[in-house]
Amino acid sequence: MTLTLHDTLHREKRVFVPRDPERVTLYVCGPTVWDFAHIGNARPPVVFDVLVRLLRREYGADSVVYARNVTDVDDKINAKAAKEGTPIGEVTARFEAAYLADMARLNVSPPDIAPHVTDHMDAIVAQIAAILEQGCAYAAEGHVLFDVSSYENYGRLSGRNLDDMIAGARVEVAPYKKNPHDFVLWKPSKEGEPGWPSPWGVGRPGWHIECSAMIEETLGLPIDIHGGGIDLVFPHHENEIAQGVCAHGHAHEADAHAEYSRYWMHNGFLTMDAEKMSKSVGNVLLLHDLVQAIPGEVVRWALLSAHYRQPLDWNQALLDQSRKNLDRLYGALADVDRLAVQAGTTLPSPRSHIVDGHLKTSGFLGAIEDDLNTPGAIAALFALSNGIRAALMGEVDWQIVSDTRAALQASANLLGVLQVDHAMWFDAGVDDSFKAEVEALLAERVTARTAKDWPEADRIRDRLNALNVVVMDSPAGATWRLKG
Ligand code: AMP
Ligand code: ZN
Image (cartoon, rainbow, N blue to C red; front, top):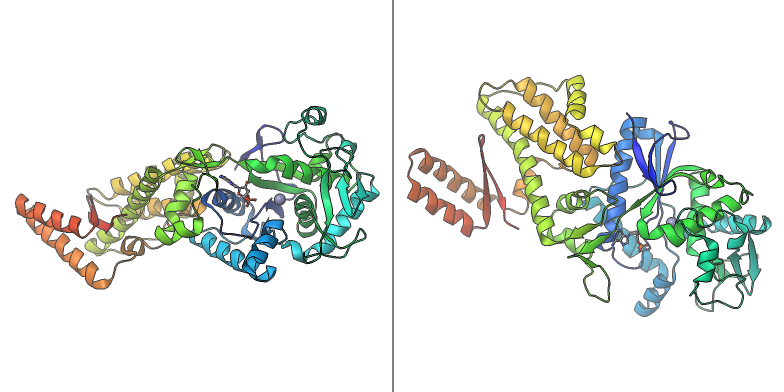
């Protein structure tokens, strides 16, 4: 396969070549566990979950190491704990557990490594000491600051020029900073705040150093791919590169950034009804609430419906359409089983070389390998489900049905959708007696239609409507689900 990825640093799509195909490394900036994640926060873990699935297919499940950190040291966490009167560890444990449960509902597989800042304090202190030793940082008034003027390529990732930044600087200049853009590696903790011992006094790390130190300790440098949302390009990732490069004495080498991460990927932002999501506008939708109300696969589908670098507008129409699309695909899988039962046949095993061929000819692999073109991959899922429906017409060749069905399932597995049994999908939230009532009405409807008794068929349709049931007809019969 030829996987191409858009690299933020090179500003173009590049063929992906890992440093070591037996150990492909990927790091994505994870949540700060002070509150529930909003729906925008769910976009990076879902997008990079698709990438990880694809990498595991290509390089082998055991040859990919995926790290997504947990930021459990942060001023917002301290403020929340103080407000609630609960210990900090209780706050972080609660929101991390909620995050993981919500991710599971989105079919996001857990990362191989989930480093916590509180577990890597020694590595963080060691990296700060190394940066100081290289002359790229200075200690002042209990703080350690990174000296941005010491790194020649500062601004390269974000396309900013330090001179322009300084000229337009509006940042508040703390008295201990040499340059307004110097950023904190370590800061002192006040009485009552969490703190760790260090050569510069009791304190805590800045946000950027956490990631660069945990990357070095858990994955080793350089990593293959670093990912996150587009808002992290500056300053977070720019600063990570500066730290990772300068800790190892590469401050003056033109291409030293490649010693930190070889590819940089960033997802576009999610908006709500065309507006930026923000607490002040009051349009923040919590993932935690959403996945209680609708199936996680609908949310995942909606997140993957646009290309990851494009903005994505979140609205009810998107969710309705996502649900309809999933119904259509699950409906094709249901048709196969129902018709096979009717025909009294057991599906033959799919032939793997034919299935692989379908993954190519449907356009699925070509799309997903082209910088994760998920809209193209979704179109291929429909091509495959249409193929299943066509194969079920007339004289059925069950081998062809089985191969096409397996290709649809394999493609869906890479996107992380169609992960439940179709019967469960359509029955979700329905008890047995309700199910029996609907099935009985559907059977009466078939009888009425066969007898061309249209007033009776209409009456049954109205009753199903009143029960909040949507019926989907196909040549293989009808499937149904609850509205909403
Ligand atoms: P934060 O908790 O703000 O650090 O964000 C966690 C992750 O979510 C980061 O990778 C952000 O870039 C990403 N993110 C935050 N808001 C949005 C949004 N509205 N759309 C897409 N990604 C977002
Ligand atoms: Zn980070």
